[in-house]
Length: 399
Image 1 (cartoon, rainbow, N blue to C red):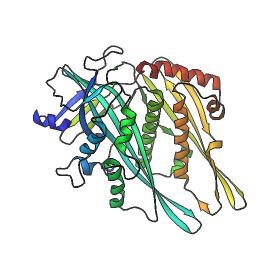
Image 2 (cartoon, rainbow, N blue to C red; image 1 turned 90 degrees about the vertical axis):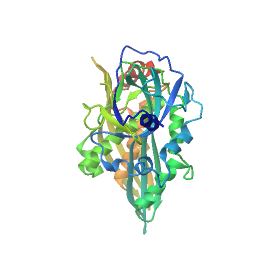
Image 3 (cartoon, one colour; image 1 turned 135 degrees about the vertical axis):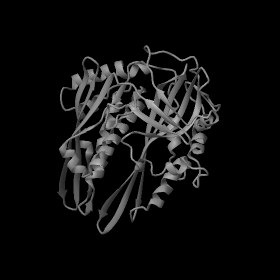
Image 4 (tube, rainbow, N blue to C red; image 1 turned 180 degrees about the horizontal axis):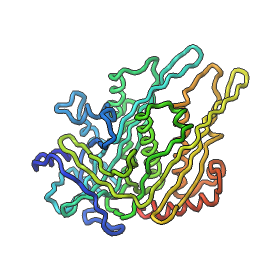
């Protein structure tokens, strides 16, 4: 574990400043990475409520609920990776060079929605875990960001009451520690990171910038300002994970509210890295413009639609690479009983994330012409050309 070798070398905290020199190159120690353990990603805007579960399993000795480092190690170490070998040996700062691979937890969230069906009331619990497998390299006294593979693990649970903090922790514990709920966070992280590379560097990275929400969207969500900012950040992280999954590229971790401050701390059990990320060469900008509810009743049934409209632009250092307006309309509809009541604050984000996933797929191997036909509002030919340009300049250099 990374904290162990820091402790052995009497280091409590040191600063990592990512330096980007030259264009794409390959490290001498590219075929091997060293396991660094689990950390929490702490930014200036992060509050103590961002990690209601992982804190109880990380900064503890002994840990009443087990140690999250052990859970991650069991799932990530000792398995094959396509482009490198993950070593269990510890790297020290006295080494000339070495790549470290760590599981960094960015955020944990639980949202509870009340739903009614006739006389029955149920509470949908939506858990999201934002986790990133990050590779960074020590080289001649410096450290630099290599690549990362983020995942967003979502789990839903229905109860007849709002879950207590203890019940919520039990869900999170099982998702980190075992497979009893049908999914494991570190299993998903391994699937995402299996094909990543730890020897590719570039001076031209892209980043998903802070998401813009229209007044219409804000009014639908009905969130306090702090919760609204957190939700905007989550949208950026979800889009980033989807883009990387489908494109195979590398992005700088999604920006929080203040995109001018790139420092954040990765807090391990006994040490903290202050990491400075580079300024992005390309910026990916999301403007969520429309949340439009549509409802029509036909006898005992009603059709409900949660139409989403957004604008995606990608800017380079000298010019804009793409500008596309997208909509999710027909696919946002479903039929329910007239007695059922659904929460728009739950359904609209679901429709939004489906649209973002569809957009992300276009940056993979082939553009889906049917998606372009049904989802692009204006100038589909220009949008397709923009997608091709972004693929060539932003994502393909890492493949």
